[in-house]
Image (cartoon, rainbow, N blue to C red; front, side, top):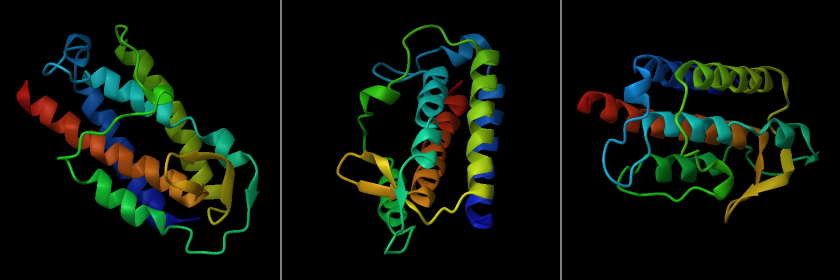
Length: 165
């Protein structure tokens, strides 16, 4: 088990659920500024991005490099808040009204699946069934680390949104 990754993932996802829980449904669906996602849409986007268990359980092979090496560049990119990123279509959030309790319940289910993966899987294996554009194949550790860093990025955005209320 990768205790460091689990601790960081737990901290990021706990902050996410706390921030979303602190909002009422109206606030959750409020557009903070033109062209922005709502807090609920950020949560929906993360929910969609957490759907990686099939990739983690899919075809894998031995890794012949540091299984976390790609996280260095991911961290650098995602912690640069001046960069506006474009999400792949499969993780673009819904434009429909987000129900707070349904969102939180769904997120918690996918969070728990990832926690179990961190605790029980060999994270050094390279996943062969999906790739991040221009990123090549990721190890299990990189997929789970990506979701952790991705969550931290959106936590920063949520904190700014909540502060502006």
